[in-house]
Length: 253
Image 1 (tube, one colour):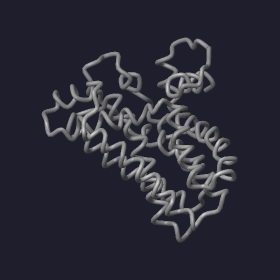
Image 2: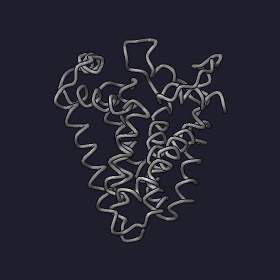
Image 3: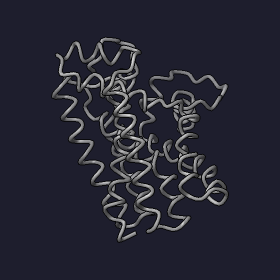
C-alpha cells in the first residue's frame, strides 16, 4: 500500500518524495485498490489549505484559491488530459487521426472550451451551494472532490483495452488491473461518501458510476479503447458530475 501511494504522489502530484520504488508499474497497477484513498489524501491537503482561506476571504474566493492550489499541487495533470481528449474525440476524424491529435502538444479550440467549461461548472456549482451549506460542508466538498475524480478513473480500468500507439504510454500501466482491486476502490469511495454525505453520498456515487459508464461507451465507440488522455479526462468529468449532483440535491443538504 505505502509503495503504491508514494508512486501515485510522485506521478500525479508535484510533491517531491525522493524515494525509489522497485517495480513501479506493477505496484501502480496493484495499488489501484487505494486509488480513491490517494484522491482523499490530496483532498485532505487541499482542505487544510481551504479552511483558513475560508475564514480570511470568504468561501467564494477561498474556492478560487483552492482551484489554483490544485493546479499547483498536481500540475494540472488531468486537465491536460481533458483538453487533449476533447480535441481528439470531438474532431470528427477517424480513430487513427483522433489518437494523433491527442498526442499533439498543441491545444485546439475544443480543448480550450473543455477546460473553460470545467472551471465554469466548478465555480458556479459551488456558488449555487453556498446558501445551503455551512463552512464544514464546504470543506467536505473540497475533501471529496479528488476522491470522486480518482474513483471515476478506476472504473475505466475494468477489462480495459489500450488504444494508444505508444506501447510504453501511461495507459498501458493500468492494463489487466484485477477486478477485485477496482471493486475495493469503489467500496472505499462508497463508504467515504456515505460517511460524509449520508444518503446524498449514495446518490452521488450511483450517478458518478452511470456517467462514467456512458463516457466509457463514448470513448470505446470512437477509438475502441483508452489511452492516458481518455483515462485522465474522466477525473474532471467526474468532479463536475459530483458538484452538479449536489446542486440538484441541495435542498436535502
